[in-house]
Length: 289
Image (cartoon, rainbow, N blue to C red; front, side):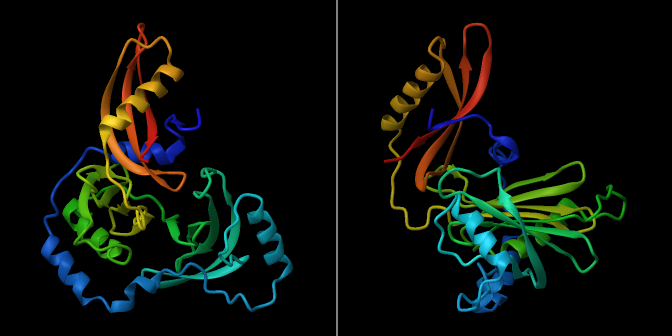
């Protein structure tokens, strides 16, 4: 089914894991004071591409553009090599690959690789559609928690300062904060129309206070004007379930989460399906028309 989602690879697993843990930020006033002290042009710290389109294309640039054209009609001027300013540091990056985890129209991504000042791998992933930075990941060695490791509350402050370069924390609330095996995972989300959404930024801070992962999925509903009427969505959900599981004995909605499907808003329903012999969980996206 075109709109049928099974839990696709690590991204949806991550989203599913995040949904459902909410808390109010304890350091909201401190975050806002940091936000208000930032220069007005701080959002420009992440650029889509700093290469001038007037420059002559190298053989590597031409090859890259041909590769991109196979999967996207983007107008963004991606080059084989690019510079990236990220959270106060500059990175020299080289094209790595078209990211194969994202293949739906409008969601295609491209990966670049570079090095940190300490020589660790730095991976940056961009949206092919608009050139926006989507993901930053750093190969800093994993550390175990020690008695002098930072606390979760300290990690929240560090995460907030990074998040402020990508979103307005007056609108994005702390939606998830938890200690994992090797790091703290923290997310800030913008709830819309009373629903949890995929409009969020996710960060991982290691026990030494280093940012090791950032995924910026903010602003996904920009330019979209919509409302949610579940009396129209539920019948479509049931049709999808009956088509995919014709012998099902019923279902239970476990989670609802607004997202984007093929550049349009959609409600992601996570449901538990009774097949008669066993229960199984799946996520189905229903477009909001």
